[in-house]
Length: 253
Image 1: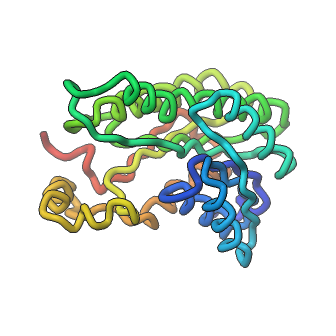
Image 2 (image 1 turned 90 degrees about the vertical axis):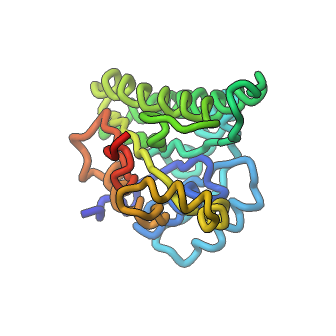
């Protein structure tokens, strides 16, 4: 179903670890050529080297999504390295739990700059490139179920992800005429190296207990829906928000 991903030119932001590194490796395994973008170049180089045997290549690109200037430069560098862009994955994000009464301006700005503002300007720069291509392209925003429901102590993160979901729909409407599709993937709780120990604790297990499937997602649980949004198999999808959460969003209050 995803044979068309072979040879596609893809930029993945926040690719130095976690979901971003997984997505970059997954796409290269499908034969896509990936610009893996982030601030930590040493990790990107290591990722590129670990993917050397895969059908597609992974090229490190320096990009700080908190800076509009750096986003534009990073998109230009990715485009130059790959010879164009077919897919952009807006994955970079930060999460710093804090109670609303204790939030600082710096914490608020950090969440909105990276999780929302940076995503818009990466999408805008990508759409300008894609609009000049006869076949357009696809933008996949990595949102969260916290953009649709809320939890304690994650106010700016939830606000940013809610904005990202609404941005996805607005851009899908405006850019359809340019053959640029914009969709979002909204994961629920996903186990990564950073949170694996937490989910093994009593508090972590209590959170998992709220998921109807009674488990958190593994990274591989995102593969099918993610690849679908990147591939031509979803060519008539735009403005969609695909939840991958074990039924968490539809659980009772």
